[in-house]
Length: 146
Image 1 (spheres, rainbow, N blue to C red):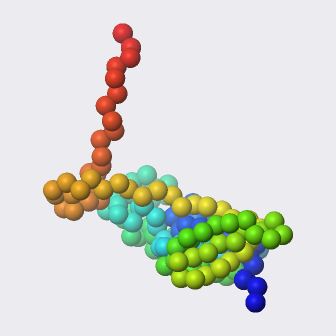
Image 2: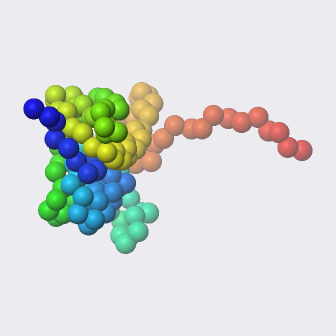
Image 3: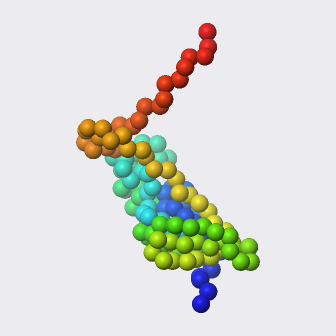
């Protein structure tokens, strides 16, 4: 049996993935979203103050709104929580996507919105301050000017 074929396959459920899914559905493309969860890196934020249209929103609330917006589009299939383990070129100019749960999907178009993951410092007190602005310092640069 052949694996299911989609017009668009989106990897990731953060803001970019959710936006891509909504636009694909509006164009009536058979769409699959594969994500470990909606919200992406914003999930660890207590307060997001640069999301246009909201003065302040928690990462959890933003993730929930993204999920609801994607689910409101009737033509989108969602595989979550699920993680892509392999993306390869398949037959007939199509891509094949494998997941950790044994899923195999095909599509002519793959949109990768995997985003980023924050880097942990592993210092005492990090858990207490997580989501409250603690972040690694950039490397020091040598002064090159006069």
